[in-house]
Image 1 (cartoon, rainbow, N blue to C red):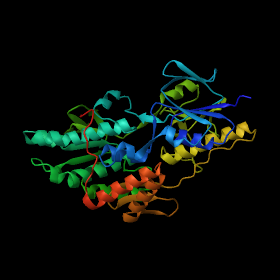
Image 2 (image 1 turned 120 degrees about the horizontal axis):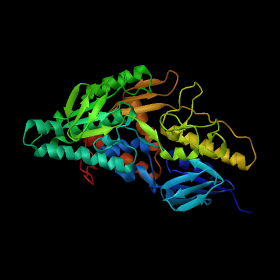
Image 3 (image 1 turned 120 degrees about the vertical axis):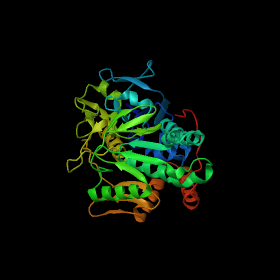
Image 4 (image 1 turned 30 degrees about the vertical axis):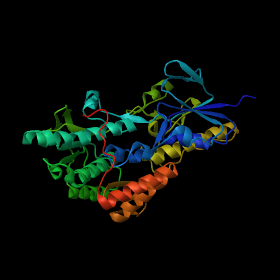
Length: 416
């Protein structure tokens, strides 16, 4: 008897979690991703800043799922979904049928209708994005060293980060540290301590998803490190030479976008209701309304916590959503009642620099400083895929702690 077929689109946190939950299911599982690797996205910003190499935070999806005999992986880009025929199309020609479908294709950065800004203000969602940003970041100092006048030098030594959420705040913290500490002995013309890192946030506080006291602590830490934080301020124009921040035009060649997300366009194929960010308004069990065989998880789904607040677009949301979808598929195969998705908030954390971090673990467990920083280090090493990556990252971080050196400062590909 032919076993049911489960197709999973996306090999990120949600897709991998769904596949792992299905490892003992009486079904064939197929994972499709346009990349061959699973990336630990919370540490992408460290690749973008030259602290870690891509191989330190990524593993092949095939390797990750190698022990699951019922699971196959193919490298390809899903270009269409036909919910009526129950098929997905890969690379415009290969058609893969399914009995159950899990869509976990994630999101991309949104420029709120100004898509032409992306050429000069890349976002950070993939390894390719991180390498692009790393090259732009490092190339700026090389150009500053060659500049023949003070204005040109200052423009190259100005870095603007748009968006004060976790990605923007962590990038600002690590980039100002690298500029003011790690790079300073290596240049002869410029003094890298003169580098300006400007963090622009349209709202009233950085890390807006955290309690106000932790946002205030993070703001104090960032400013204490030398980051120029502009709150309640919008960016209205970006080009290759400058960015308009409020009423001020800042000369810069290095702008990084961390201000918004939009769901994968694959959501439009499902015929489901979408919100303004293109996310699917799913049923309590994460299935698509009217399509009980189709599940949407992670950044592509609109889900709520028990207190009514939206589930944040973080790794835990994807992991728990993927596991829930996988569990409900198993329950359907076994003719058992499905369970609604219940998000368990295991805490929110952000690190800003050496001994500087904030942590909200729920209830009254809210704190910052060295303890939060050490806890952040421990948790992120523990969640990395593979013993090799955990060991390498631990060694990298220990070396950086004692020497201030960042060892993966290679300029590759796009140089800005």
